[in-house]
Image (cartoon, rainbow, N blue to C red; front, side):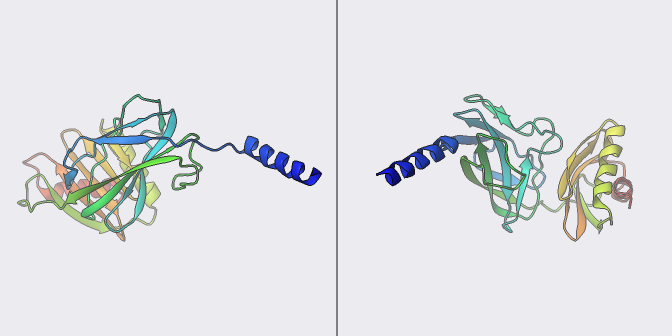
Length: 225
């Protein structure tokens, strides 16, 4: 009998120390109702949860590679107030790019801050959505919308900081990390990059009278190339 009571007390004590976590119901509304996007199109979503929580947005691309795209360096505030819609990527747009095809956007929620960027251990609610990304259409040389690649810098972290500082010093905006990013300098250039074994750059805006080669040269300077 004493052994049974001791076991019961131990179980109750363990429950008190480690209470069951309630499921958080979180959802997202995509501004593109058909969930179809094109190369360089901004991902615009609004999230809503039934409880106060922390959240993150994870992109699982067509190659099944996973990346946390929110919170990020431009906006680290991932606290969500219950029953209060919140627009994500307000401070800096998140531009979509390859690999192209169908991928998954995961909205994960936790009652406590996540242990680290990739961990799901503290996740107590999530919602998954499939979106489709189409590749860019062919564009005439010299028109806004062209791409190029160059050798990956030895110190990619320093290169990203150089791009960030160059954009900000010219009154522009920058959102990015070691894997991908978006940059814009008003009146000069806007585009995005993603990093594989090389740095792939897609230009989305440029003055019509400036040749692509000059834009390419300036962007490479941003990366110290």
